Amino acid sequence: MKNLALHWQILIGMVLGIVFGILASSTGLEWFVNDWIAPFGTIFIKLLKLIAIPLILASLIKGIADLQDISKFSKIGGKTIVLYIFSTLIAIIIGLTLVNIVNPGDGISQETIDTLTANYANDSSIQKKMETASSTKNTGPLQFLVDIVPDNIFKATADNGSMLQVIFFAILFGIGLLLIEKKKAKPVIDFVDGFNEVILKIVDLIMLIAPYAVFALLAKVIVSTSDPDLLMSLVTYAITVVVGLLLMIGVYLTIIALYVGKSPMWYLQQISPAQLLAFSTSSSAATLPVTMERVTEHVGVDKEVSSFVLPVGATINMDGTSLYQAVAAVFICTALKHDITFADQLTIVLTALLASIGSAAVPGAGMVMLVIVLESIGFPAEKLAIGLALIFAVDRPLDMCRTVINVTGDATVATVIAKSEGKLGTPKPKNWDDNYEAVK
Ligand code: ASP
Image (cartoon, rainbow, N blue to C red):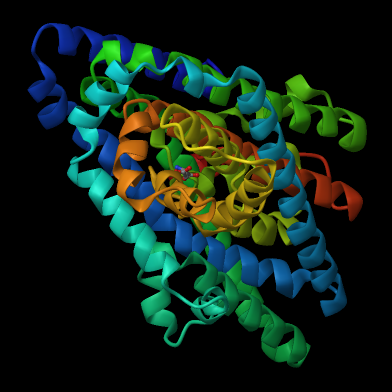
């Protein structure tokens, strides 16, 4: 196993995890997976989250301090936002086009709606999602700007959900470093640089257990999935989402081939460990340290670009989520016979764009913001729980798939910006044991 490329090791772990999960489910051993296997997956996710904030802080401060002038930073910032909005719009348009062609909501019988409603409409996690959505909605239009500015850096770094606040502080700190005397800035930059290297080394160490962790994560997903019959009743809807997501991969790879001038196969090989982890963890935030490591060391994107573009992307750029929200909104409306006009579809484009920016990079967040998309087109509030119940059974597998696209979108935009800025160099992968001999 040791000589296999990392993505193969992870894939083998995933397949074995699925097989083990199926065996455990069919022999009544779900408790064994929950008690003795799943905790290892949780530990892995905690380890990744543990280093996310220090990694953003160190790499972004270093990235900005390395810039020769501040105007370069605002140029990268501007390009990042424009490309993120553009890629999200493409995703939504693909989703809407597909759902209008396939129309998966049409084939859903009243009986299926009744079964799904009975199973899930009162499910506590659906109720919780609706509550979160309504508290998000009850804020003013500029609240998001207010939220980006931290009032206490320790509080911000103590909460993985405050990534944008940490990014804000790191940018401010980096700019401060650029503006002070070189002599005074040097020790701080050297410290941050060394700190950054240590964190990246820890990513390598954590990745050593990735193949085992994905085994645990997928075994857990399988023993927690809903009744296969219910999954089957939603198969056309699920396939519509997955085809849309695959088309997005096609879009990214075309851009990589035509604009960046790299082979799509090579590119996929470099970023696949991040994609596989996105699939296994359903969280782009948890995957972020690995995405950063792969894009910087294996694709060759300069830290100046990746340290800003990727953390921002993990929080605001969710192409897969927005595509899913567009498909799910139209699916729910058609299945529950709520008419939608062309103007409603345009509203979906806008709200899905905003909703994906507002979705947290954690499992199931896309479904919370779907509530807001549905409300924007006048979907009756009393039917919301039924609407969510309709798609709940397949939400986890679709979440896994859309998170892969979210992460791939971030990586692709980072690569494109690096190319356009002349910051795409030769990859220099590092291994966890590069200096091991000396300290053994
Ligand atoms: N799980 C997704 C992510 O972390 C968000 C979502 O669509 O639920 O990227």
